[in-house]
Image (cartoon, rainbow, N blue to C red; front, side, top):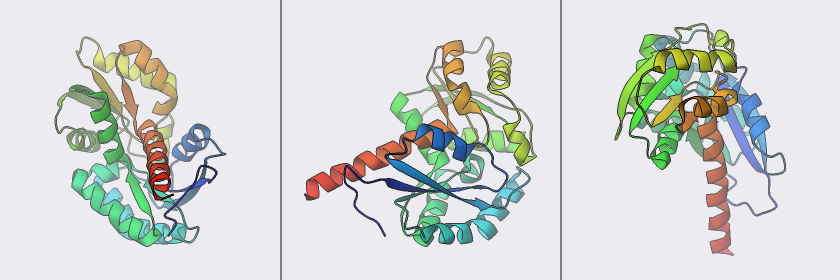
Length: 239
């Protein structure tokens, strides 16, 4: 297991995504400077975005993919599925990530946990939630980030074909949010799903509503940077 980095080292990020996800790795490659990070992806079979299929993905496909990624000796593993991590709350996400990290031999980042931490740093207290999911998974992610804040409402597009989660354009996402949030009062917006083009829409959403916006992929990017900073602090103390 790699436990130390220095200012000149490149952090290896192992990324686990549902097999039909076409967005997350592109967002991470675009957002993470190549002189500081490399991103290495493996896939967990999933075609249908439902609770039953996501449980199957975690139990049957994620462990082997994490073990495969462990062979590249990563610094950190990202479990890249927001809704799957939220199925039974943040403690469940932490347990899944811990078990996958043991297989990969490294620290882990869970998306829904990273989102909750990002929202805490922004001190959002009245939160609106937008997703591409069906009602069940929309409510699941809203419930997972509800601790310490009021969820003023959670709205999903009803998409259950996982590859189709990437179909709405950033403009579509902004239009959907405008429709659902018209007249609502909130001080934070969470737009869920690593296979949703919300990271590209984030600036337009912030301009439209005048509140901080956290997306699944923005929270992960922030968490990866914070992980690197903590590693460097530990290395400096040990020097």
